[in-house]
Image (cartoon, rainbow, N blue to C red; front, side, top):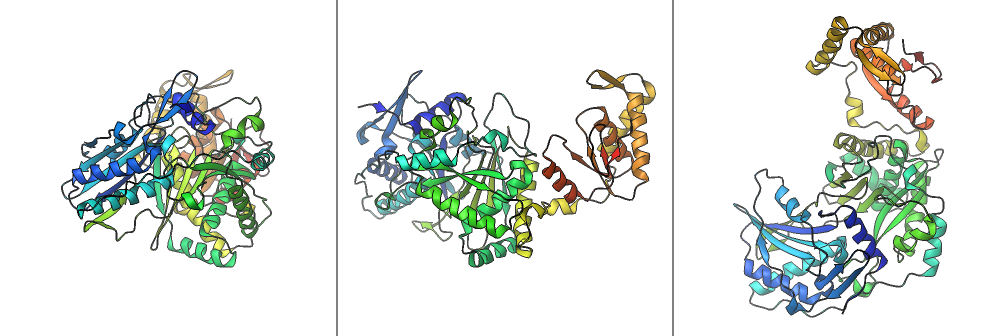
Length: 555
């Protein structure tokens, strides 16, 4: 019997229609064994898990306007275990491709499984559509698959006793009222970071990841704060993430999404889509210290958990009214996900060493997500980011600055957060003067050669004013002389895109100094913080930008 899908399920389906033929909603769980997997045992163990959890046998059908779901009987479902061809790059691109292959919403199973045979190790991968699955389900599925395989290998029978399905709860009206009040007046469009890319009209939702292992000093600070501030590791790291975002343009009204498991104590082993994304709204007072930010973050987090029974899809229409829809979340662009280890490092399967394999699907509907993966010996931050929103280099810099922020907080817990430096390891390692690389020299030579050969040729179309190469080079030389007469090794340039910016950039290059470009459209506090961090002197500003102490860019 088919029944109508829930609002949460329909919202996911609508997202998929925005980017058809992608695996944007696919979730993968994989493990590697140092040896050979018995395909027959693995297939039988998987069938036992499917018989046990009806949600894995739930299929969906759609037309232009509606989405319905239906549960298939165990004997109606056939999920063959296929071969995953091994790639040549050694970077698990083959697993990513397997995870990213789209499912059809046409009544067919939303699950597939495969084995990649290696020279000395096999990898088993199961991919499930997010309609039937969430992050906690990966742990449950993996645990039951391994237990079933072990039982079969020992000549026993896997546990295939049906488990009662966990139905989605009716939203509590008190929780609905809480979110309507808490989210009133909030617009994620105003929370973009200054280092983000310009918005695109037709998103690809393609994503990449960058990993960073927290330094020993940063981990020590987090452990100390857990004791001193009486906060969990997750809360301390979440509070630091909110400060990092505020430092980079998110403003003082920072909203971070985080998934919350809504299973009750009797249903902790239920596979399915039993998590709600909740927005954590932390108002970062620039004059407050980190202790106050942690206190507010902890309170906000606990309140959100107590009202997490309501999916945001039940709240959005009432809060947003007639606001235009977008592929972006209406409430947040940045996520935080605290993910404890999935498999013990000492785990084995029939005596073979086993390790968990992280498999990406290659897509994200959020700008940036920090996955915190703590371990006994290391804590890794996996930053997943949408390539429509960020460059990998900027995300890598954000991770370094996150680490440096934690260390800095340990040295100066009482300092107001607005006064904290945002510098990271690479910021501090930048050379005092810009080395003349082959690329730099070739650009300068090319501009100079063109200015000499064709001085009247248009170099920059700046509004109604066409600036020639001769005029541009003359302004660059004047800038060089101005900068060379100063004592600073770093020069800041504040100018909109146009001829003045081009002339200033070329002039700083010619003077052999390092250039820091500032965007005049950014909020004044952000500009002031970036300028303070850079240590730049002098500051060159375009005409019409009154900046105290700045020098006018030569015309």
